[in-house]
Image (cartoon, rainbow, N blue to C red; front, side, top):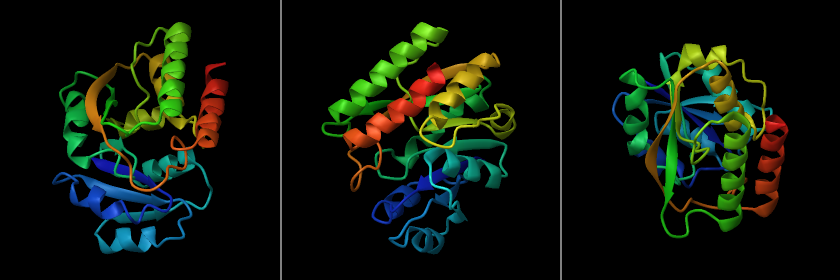
Length: 213
């Protein structure tokens, strides 16, 4: 059954909700990226495996989780209540069925779940991705699944916000099959470090823009 990498930076308020919805057999790996609110201690108390990654960065946390994983199949998802862990089997399913190599959850937002500036930035990046590569995606969603061996073969180098886009670009370059499935996108718990702020969104766009260039 899959391992689920959960990058965490001060998500104590959301952790119980995310972990209690984890499907049976799915193993959560909480990667603490410098939390000061007790997230790591709480995750351990709730039964999750905890990994500490002192180097700040979304990609750094994801890579640490990938290195710590042992399952054949690895999932990634945000740990801020914006994504429901119960949707993971729908993302994993096409990989297990041999229909795709990398599956992304295409976010279907509820009211108030996706700030306008973040949604527009995502749309711009997806449009530019399609123009430059021909990859037909609707979203660069953070819930995704892929076999561990193939993830390692991508040799991802970005350790910041470009990690999700680099994964798609490298998978495409290697001729792997990429698929989207719809997942609900919910109002997150607390303030986002990335998409919830204009500054964070601009940083993510900058990192991804450099990869596209």
